[in-house]
Length: 243
Image 1 (spheres, rainbow, N blue to C red):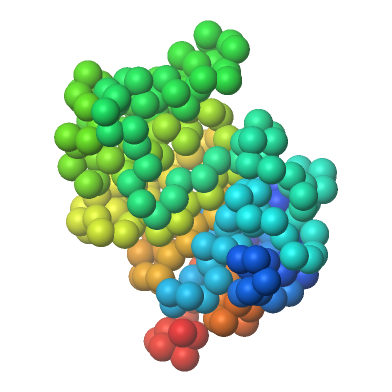
Image 2 (cartoon, rainbow, N blue to C red):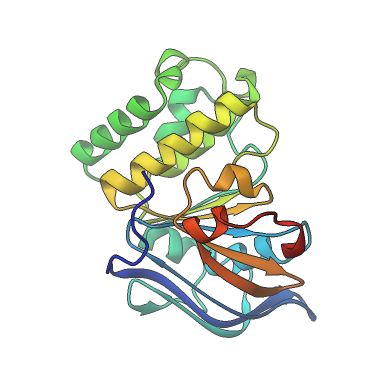
């Protein structure tokens, strides 16, 4: 069930007037967005709209050219990936990010590399296996030999092993069968509802994103052109004018 987006919840990440790009080429202009605790927000738009650039800048892969990023009350505008990861951010890129020559088990252990508490590691281990039982069945199998859908599950599980507070997902449904997409998005929704995990999803397929998203930001040519709730987006007759 999609929660009521008007419910008052603490803001986990807030972006104000963000400007970003690659070197001297600016591709993101004055982007404002925010995500509350336990909320799933989707940024939708065509290829080249600036979605991935925005996500990479929030995570610290790319430097912000301007604006402010605030994460859990702290200014992280100039923070690097390692610092943001330690603070509780985790990114799953569009490509299937697993260490192919390692077993599924070893991939997951890498995700919990900086977790000192054995009890917390065990708790996350149980959580990801409850979400994705197939990974428990394939724990001794090399990740490269998994199917595309299973690799996507493994990449998400790897990210979750670090116990993130903010999960950044770049095109999680890309190239997956519909049944796998439903299973994957159901797991994401379950995490948000039960653990308070905040999620930003980048997606081109609005129909898929409607399954789990509380609020939408529509991006075009590097700018946010529209913000709508799940109900408002469902009420639209079509989406062509947004792209």
